[in-house]
View 1 (cartoon, rainbow, N blue to C red):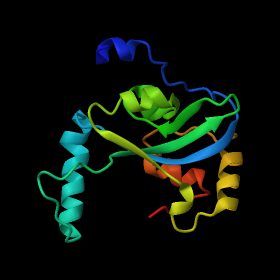
View 2: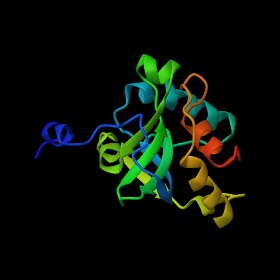
View 3: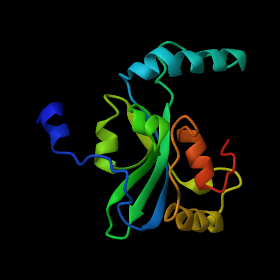
View 4: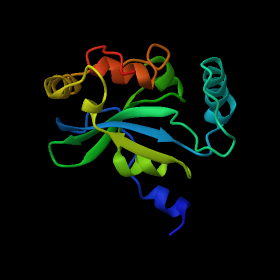
Length: 164
C-alpha cells in the first residue's frame, strides 16, 4: 500500500475532545524529514541556536525534533496525540489545539521519526504531577498558535512547568 492510499484511510485530527484522558503515555517528539516550515524556518533557527551554544552538529546527523505533543490514552483505549498546530487561519488565530489519532500523527512524519518519552523523565515531573496533568487535560482550554506554540502547550499542560 502506498503512502497516498494509506493517508486517505487515516482519521483526521479533531478540534473536539475525543474522550476523557485516562492515561498520559508521555511526551511525544516528532521530526518530519520533509517539512517546508522545518526546512526554511525551524532548522535554520535550530542550527543558529546550537552554534551560539557551542554545540555543533555534523551534516549527516539525524534531524532534531521540531514538534512536540502529549501522547494520551482515552477512556475507550484509543491513543491520541494532543497537540498545538499551526497552518490554517483557525489554528493560527482561534484554536490550534488538536486531538490527533496516533496513527495519523505518525503518518505525518514524512520519512522522519517520532519518540514518546515518559513525562517523569523530565525534571520537576513526578507521578503526582502526571495525575494532575491528566485531570487538567480533561478540561484544558484551547488557544491559538499565535499565543501558544507546541512547546508552550506542553508546559501549560504540566501546570506551566518548564520542561528543559
